[in-house]
View 1 (cartoon, rainbow, N blue to C red):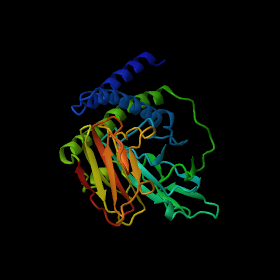
View 2 (tube, one colour):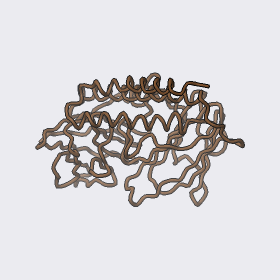
View 3 (cartoon, rainbow, N blue to C red):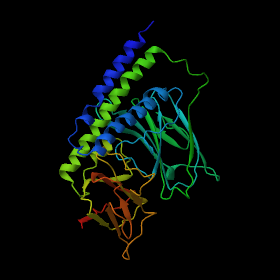
View 4 (cartoon, rainbow, N blue to C red):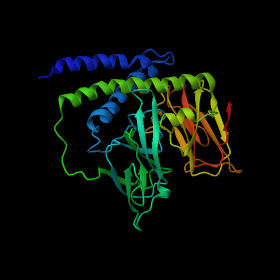
Amino acid sequence: MKDSAELWRKFCADLEQAGTHVLGSHLQTTETEKAEGLRYLTRLLRIGLDMHLEHADPAFPSFYQASHETAKIGADNPDNFYQNATISGDYDYRITGQRGSVPILSFATKANRYAVDGTMASTGELDISDVKMDPAGNFEIIISHEKSGQNWLPLESDSTMLIVRQTFFDKETEIPAQVKIERVGAQDAPVPLSFETLSSALTQVPAFIGGTSNIFHHWAELFRKENRNALNTLDQSMFSKAGGDPMIYYLHGWWDLAPNEVMQITSEIPECEGWNFQLNNIWMESLDYRHHNIHTNNGLAELNADGSVTLNISAKPQASNWIDTAGHYKGTMLWRWTGAKTHPLPHIEIL
């Protein structure tokens, strides 16, 4: 008989150590930021348990959300509906779905190593524009090592995660895609949870919390040092190594405003599939978009007469394209160009 109490004590001790990067951060200077830091750790715990315990069997994959309204990682996109599933290079998989009307839909296999070395290498990418479907919008995608079927998503021996990204320009009117995943040839059923499986999960969860918080704390420190009130992260390699979408050009920065100041961001709009801008807290979580207007995109923003766009970021409402700081005075920010031909650098003024 295994010692459940010993395993629990070790898990709790590992959780305490996993919070080091957050609890010791010099970035947090307000009571709100400290409270959000503790909440961030609980959110990573929830995500980690979904990832490494509840949805961890690659033989019987199921979708969960590693980022959503109340659990957030690495400048999560408020315009996105993320779906994640645990997979393995030992199996082949089938995705079946219905297209809906969401403007951007993509599928990717990843080698998730956030808990090891902070990377999430791409092992396969497939955009919905390359997917063949029937007249009603139904489709099937095969995930495998060798090319199979008319819609194929590559899989490598070290692939461990499937990510489905649905990007909306107007969530109130656009219809989400419906997707399901199954292992090809699956006929049996999952075995009951073993102590060894649980032990492995409870070891991986604190490692995930520590690794993930370390990655994005480092990013926030870097943006604060090099991109204060600026959006000009031209080197995309750091973002692609961490699992970024290859269709997206990321411009990260650090915003820092006094209560009476306005950050005015103006940018030309290139030919692209879409764009968006968002505010995050110091932990690189999007601010609360359930109750505050903390982001905008090509479907929501009002354009200038010359086709450019000007955003106004402040604590107080502005006449047009107001981005609400939601009671915060600093944090990270992000502009995404999706499928863009060129990548303009937005101009920023503090008024």
